[in-house]
Image 1 (cartoon, one colour):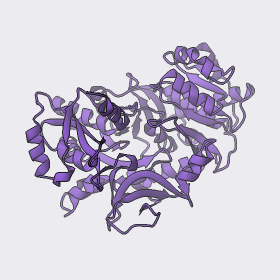
Image 2 (image 1 turned 60 degrees about the horizontal axis):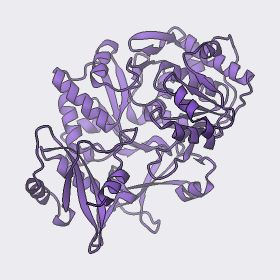
Image 3 (image 1 turned 90 degrees about the vertical axis):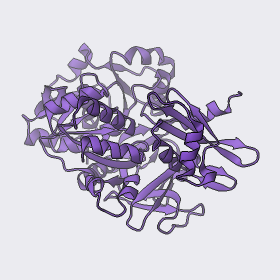
Image 4 (image 1 turned 90 degrees about the horizontal axis):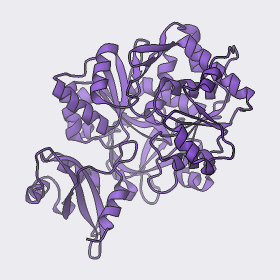
Length: 510
C-alpha cells in the first residue's frame, strides 16, 4: 500500500474540492494537486529516481511542500523532511547519512545548502521550488497511478532533533503512517471534508504528519501567508476559513491564548488545537480553556511512534465534574487505539498501576527501526516494545502522567526528583512565566535542584516568596536550592527547552 493512494482516491472522489490554500487563496483543487504530484513522480523517475530512493525536503512551509511530498511517494520513493531552521551543515549531514538522491529546497535554503555542498552526497541535485525547473517538473501530463508499494516499505525517514549527539533516522513505513493517521479519527478528532488543516508548525515534524488523514478526507490544507506561526494571523485566518484544525506546541498555545485574550476573542473558527511535543503545564491548559473554551486535544508521541502513544480527548478536557479532573488534565491521556502502553522498572519488569518507571509502547505505528543503526535499534526496540526513554506512571484507569525523560530525573540524596513536578508548582506562582528545572552536581547530595525562570512582565525575582510557595506545595527536599532568572529559556527549533544547554550554563565557572 502506497500512502499516496490516499491523494489519488480523493482526486477521483472530490476532484473540484479545494485542496491547497495559501492563506485564504485556493492554489489547487484535488485534481490539480494529484496531477502535479503525478507529474513530479514521472519526471523524477525519468531522471533515474527509483522506488525506495531517498529525497530530502529542506524548505519552509508552503503548499509546494505537500506537492513535493506526494510526488516523492507517488514515485515510490522515501521522503526525508528536514526542519528548515537547522543549520545547513546539519541538513547536509542528514542528506549524506540518508544517501539522498536529490533535495527539494526553496529560495531561502538553496544558497545555504549549496554553501554546504562539501558535506552533501557528491553531485546531489538541488531543485528549488518556485523556479522554472520546478514548474516544468510538475507540469507534464501523467496518468500513471502511484507506484505499488508494500505496507512495510519505508516511506518517511524522520531525523530526531539530535539534542544529545547526531540525530538518528527514524524509519516509518506506509503502514506506520496509515495506522497513525487512522488513530487520529479514533482518538483525536473527527475529520470532515469542510475542515481545514492549518500548518503553522513545521511541516517537517508533527504538523506534517497530520496531512494524511486530511488528504484522505478531502479537506483544505492551509499554509499561512507568513509560512509559520503568528498568533494574530492564525486567529484572523480561522475566522475567515472556519472549521480550522492545527497542531501546536505548548509554547504556541500560550501565545495563541494571549493573543485571543488581548483581542477579546475566543478563537472563533478554530475547531481543534492538538497540542503536544513538550510539557503542557496544568495552569497553562486551564487558562487556555478559560479563554478559548473546549477546543483542545492533547497527544503524546515520539518520532518513533508518530503522534500515537496517548491522547487526552476533548471530552476529558471538558469533564470538570469528574472527581479526578485535575489529575487527568495533568496527564497525557490514555493509549491510542492502535497501541499498548506499559510502565517497566529498571529490571524490565512490568510495574503495577501508579508505579513510576519507563514508558514503553507497542503497536502498528511503532517505527521499523533506525536507519543504518542496528545498535540503536536493538537498544530501543526490545521484543517489539519501544523503550521511549520517558518516565511516567499509569493509573488504574489507564491515564498516563509523564514525569520526565529518564536522563532528566534528578537524584538528590539517593531520592528521585522529577523536574516536571517542581516546574508545575513554580508555574502556579504569579511571578513565573516559564520555568525549567535541572539537577546540577553536588559533592554531598549527588545533585541539587536548580530552577531557571522567565519572570512574568513586571515581576522581580523574590527567592523567599518562591521558596515559601514551593514549601507550601511540595516536599522540602524537592525545593530548588537556587533560582536563576533568564530573559528566555533556550529552545530547539520545535520549541522544546534544551536542558542540555541549561546544564552547560550551570557548569560555567562563576
